[in-house]
Image (cartoon, rainbow, N blue to C red; front, side, top):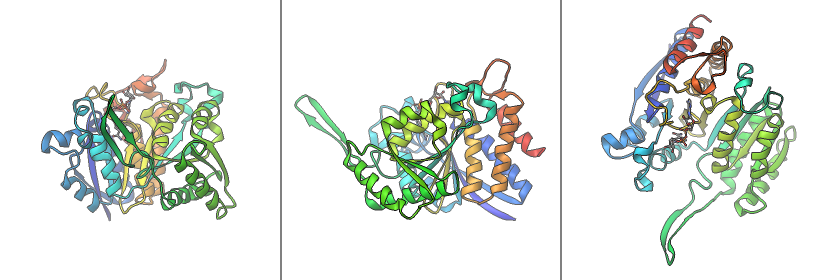
Amino acid sequence: MVKYRIAVLPGDGIGKEIVPPAMRVLELIGDKYGMEFEFKEALVGGAALDLVGVPLPDDTLRLCLESDAVLLGAIGGPKWDQLPTHLRPEVGALLPLRKKLALYANIRPVILYDELVAASTLKEEVVAGTDMVVIRELTGGLYFGEKKREKHPTGEKAFDTLVYTTEEIERIARLAFETARMRRKKLTSVDKANVLESGRLWRETVTRLAGEYPDVELEHMYVDNCAMQLVRAPKQFDVIVTENTFGDILTDQASMISGSIGMLPSASIGGQVGLYEPSHGSAPDIAGQDKANPLATILSAAMMLEYSFKHYQGAADVKRAVAEVLKKGYRTGDLAQEGNKVVGTKEMGELVAGAIRTD
Ligand code: NAD
């Protein structure tokens, strides 16, 4: 039997509620196909700050590096918002974790299940059939450039810098071209080359690489236009590749096409160990109430099967189980419409597990 070690980092807020259903789904897929998953849990984010005083303990990082994949819930919350920047869960844990695991690419599929067309805030004719992948550069750009605060005659001055090297742009662009090649062969590179120097280097580099991928149609788009096009005509997109911060913002916006941010999974890859997490945060407003949608995390587990373990059949089973449960009318509160059967986090997890068992 093949055995995989998975580091489980539930984190904060709804993280603790959405991770167990995804683990259950992996166990069932393991039973079905003869894979054994060994789960080891570790502290991260606010939960780690409260217990050991740092947001990313060395033990947690070591466990991640020694595992075959990482399953993360979400981190952060108002309790830790006032801490100095380097201790805040997002800056002190999430960013270094991505850097230390060398996860330079974050892959976020935006797919609208037929059953959820009515749950999208956009008109059916605009969103039905949307199927795109956003590839966000994850270890460079504005989130990782030098940041500083200093005294200023008016009070203080703060700055963040957006830095990219040719190499960083090339590796994410190659992944995007390769991804487009396996799909509908259209790549939209999103930048702000009309204003930012880093955007000009981004555009020049992607354009140069396009020569190696003559079968892929490349278009460039400014990020402000892309934000508009995503809600005007999302079906025009196949693969989008973009800078770290732009990708963060655009994918939250794109999540509403799929009905809820609770539907958007993600895979962060590039190093030895892939990290899988929902695209949303710790949702403190609904934490501990059994209201969170666990499907983004369950679908992130499907991405783990696909990207880390190359088990495409298992991944397909998970996606089919999710579609089946939605087809039967079950919804968590974030997606609920008239006539739906509204369920909590746990029940939604059990329903997906049941659909895998009876597959
Ligand atoms: P959020 O994504 O946590 O929540 C935004 C809204 O979406 C909230 O109304 C929330 O209830 C809802 N929502 C999110 N996930 C949901 C789910 N699975 N089911 C149903 N509803 C869901 O974003 P926020 O409120 O801006 O941030 C909250 C905290 O999370 C902050 O501390 C932030 O820094 C952190 N955060 C962490 C990550 C991460 O861990 N990767 C990502 C984004 C934000």
